Image (cartoon, rainbow, N blue to C red; front, side, top):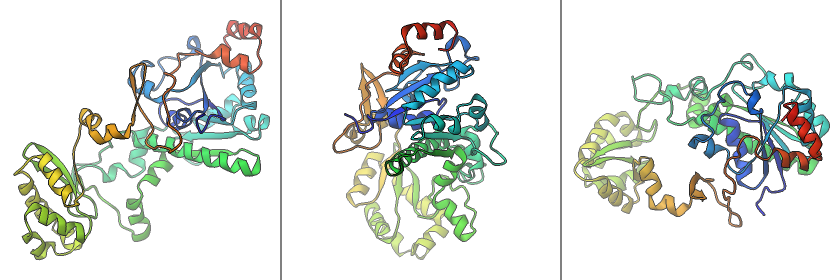
Amino acid sequence: MLPLAKFKVLDLTRVRAGPTAVRQFADWGADVIKIEMPPELAEGEGLGGPREGSDFQNLHRNKRGLTLNLKSPEGVAVLKKLAETADVVVENFRPDVKTRLGIDYAALSAVNPRLVYTSISGFGQDGPYAKRPGFDQIAQGMGGLMSITGEPGRGPMRVGIPVADLCAGIFAAMGTMVALLEREQTGRGQWVQTSLLQAQAFMLDFQAARWLMNGEIPKSAGNDHPTSIPTGVFTTSDGAINIATTGGAIWGRFVEAMGHKEWSEDPRFATGGDRSKNRHALNALIDEATRTNTTAYWVETLNAKGVPCGPINNMQQLFEDVQVNHLGIVKQLDGIKYLGQPFVLSANDSPVTRHPPKVGEHSDQILAEAGYSAEQIAEFRKNQVV
């Protein structure tokens, strides 16, 4: 019995932020029903990439599949019937779409007051930007991230993963679980809302605090840490290495490990503020020193002295790493590898038990569980309701 096995989740999501949220429930045992438009009614190629592609497969494991035409009154009626016994609905339509379809929080909570209804949008459910289409890179730019990413003087740069999408999905799952815990006290569900813009702003963290509390507008610093110097990427004889020396104690261990105690005696580098002010000169000295040996040598030498450092892995090197393998983040099912959950519980694992469903793969089963007869299901198919 997995921790979330008692929950039923209706998944109306697509692309990435919504599926990321729902994956948290699917991986921990919830009965997740992925609801999609019948293929003959679908409008062009769906967002989110090919169904058999690695991206889609990674996002949609551990679910059952149902097709349902939510543009028809019959389809909406079926969804409401399913909602009667569901715990959670997750959707990431544009804010006006669900109201137009008649499947918004007010409509579904009327049939099940215990329902937790979770909405993810680009910019929020209301306000001046509410009806704008939202995509990850737009949120990265509007959310301040691109202004602090990249090398100084080179202009804004996107992050190499859809971080706004992913964080919005994780926060949506967290908010949903908070609402489910609160329901234990009140017996009532509620509407959980988040957006790519909110998630991105929150993830600015200390950079946002620099503005909010000090009025300081952070700038891009490339591979240098904005405040803790020296921290960055340095060249080795066979590649590069990340080194982080935060605070005076680590700085002392660092200069000893590097064999350059004279750096600690140089007035330009006496304090953290001095090292920050003279970062370019210090980084040049460090880079000259690290070039004299291999990445592996410096990783072993610096770690032996308690100096944080590490290689810069590509994807193959990451998943061949002994610690990554020890952590067991890769899950397999029928020889196919999936990226697993990033946390563990002492009493439970989060296995991959189902490959992503084919379109409508479990429609008959799910509808029968909801109380529909074989004749009714056949009529639904005839009328393109499912």
